[in-house]
Image (cartoon, rainbow, N blue to C red; front, side, top):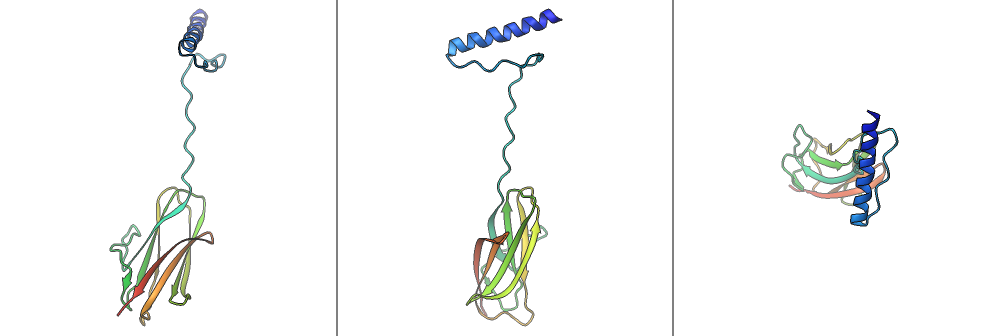
Length: 158
């Protein structure tokens, strides 16, 4: 058995030397002693994708998957307004904040959700007002851990 292992090492070393001379490339580092297996090195796993907000969609309703059913940027005074925030990447903890404002930056509502995504995720925010929204221009600003990520504008019409 020992003679066969020695022959195997000798063949591997000779094969590498012949390869190196024929290709004029550097020979690979020798196999660790005591190892009969000369398997190729395993590539390092890819680094996880960095967390980011990929899209914000507004609408009047959402599905069970928290995605807006029918995107729109125009709402009626009595509509509930949903913001579906799609994210990519992973993180042990991220806090998404939605700040809803009216015309002159008057804050209408602010809310946050803490998530721990391991890949693509969707987070839902919404605002409703039984007595009706004033007609005009609004926007929702999405922040991640206090840093602005994106803004989406919309309008309430009669």
